[in-house]
Structures are given as structure tokens and as C-alpha cells.
Length: 300
Ligand SMILES: O=C(O)CCC(=O)C(=O)O
Ligand SMILES: [Fe+2]
Image (cartoon, rainbow, N blue to C red; front, side, top):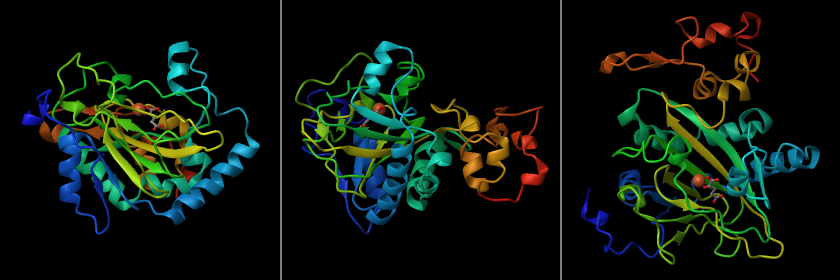
């Protein structure tokens, strides 16, 4: 633990911010120290506009796939009643694959996670659109989705790239972060007034560790929608938040680019080289054994 674990240590006034040309060493160091950083222009407006176009078309057609329906009231509240969330993006919104395999985002996720694994998985790719008059989401650690406190250690087991598909402002619900909170002792909670908001333009990306306290902000506007795409990765031995092998069942996955299929779970996690074992198998072998041979090579 560095000196910043000291509760009295002042946190930066803003989420650390970087612009092009990207100094990835400095960005990695900021995420290590503070748990989060904004990388201006990383996804770019062009790609975000294309993602928005496909999402708009989907939402216009589909009125059912977007509301919280976990069956657990506290979790539905967490997901938000004025917030539209859309999952299964890799198959529903194909252009999102360009975010999921974005060279610099994916390389960052690898650098963050490979100290604790040999392969990474997509944990979820989710569109989160915070609507007018939504209340602030309660501040949480994404890693608590698996089991509170169990997964906190020096290296994160999951990280997220929150892509700004619209601007993120103080008024429309920009993500709030408790900088440095991934290094806090168990039981410490953020104090009122200490959260810092990620202010972003369309195309900027907020990178953060799953073990830093954060939450969607309050949208106090009468008419603005704050739309982001949360692309989360996790260690390849950890159960992803979204079930990738159902997002793309074998007959669909067989036609996907191999890198995407692997990120969805169609590859074993082999830690035998470090004295571990193998998980993610089928019939004690490669899960791609489920791919129908006639579909192999037909890319969608
Ligand atoms: O929408 C946001 O800004 C954050 C959402 C979030 O943290 C979550 O749903 O886990
Ligand atoms: Fe979260």
C-alpha cells in the first residue's frame, strides 16, 4: 500500500485525465494509484456515432430487453428505473465488437489483468443510458458482484472501459468515483463530497478497476440522456457477469471472429504453466468442440 491509503491523504480534484498522444505508462500508473482515469478521444466520435445508430435502431424495435428484471428489488433499484440497459451487445449491436476488441482498450485490459490470469474474458458489454430525473446510483464496487471483499487484492480481477457514447456531464449523470478507494481497508465507505465525476465528451473513455467505489450520477436534466457503453473484462478463470456462451451460442459463435469467440468463453483458461489447472472445458477439452463444423469459417 502506498501513502495514499492514508485516509487523510487528499485525492485529486478531478479524475486523472489524459489526451493524445497517449502515454500508456502514465495512464496505467494513474489507474494503479487512483483506480480510474479518463482517456480523451480514445474511442473516437466516429465509432460512437455508429454504435449509437445501431443502438437507436435496436431500441426503436425492441421495447422489452431493456428494463431491469432481476427479480431482486434491491438489484433492480441498483440498475435504475429511469435507466435503459441493453446487454448481449456483441450479437445485437455488431459494431460494438470494434469497442470490445479496440486495440488500445484490449491491450490495457490485458496489462491490468494478466498478472492474475493467462487469458481474459469479456465480463459484460452493456449500454447504460441514464434518463432525465434518474437518481444517483448507489456507490459500489463492481467486484462485489462476485462476493464482497473476497476479490480485493493488489491486482484487479476485473476492469471496465466506460465509453462515452454521449457527453458525460455533472448534470446528466457522469460516473462518480471514489479515487483511490480500491486500496481502502474493508469497511471504509466514501464520505459525502469526496466523489469525483468523470466529465467526458462523446468518444472519451473512463477506465476503472472493478474494486474502486463508483456509481452512475444523478441525471437532474429535464431532457438529456447520458449514454455509455460499459465494456468490462475479467480474469479468464472468473465467471463473467453476462453469460458469453449464451450471448453467442455455439452455432453463432462459430461464425464470429475467433478473438471475440474466445472473449465470450470459447477457450479454456490454462494456468498449468504456473502450477495451476484448467477451467472452461467441455468433455475435458476445448469448448470449441461444440462448434458445428459446417459453420466454421463462415464469419458474421
Ligand atoms: O452508468 C454509470 O456511470 C455506472 C454504472 C455502474 O457502475 C454499474 O451499473 O455497475
Ligand atoms: Fe458499477
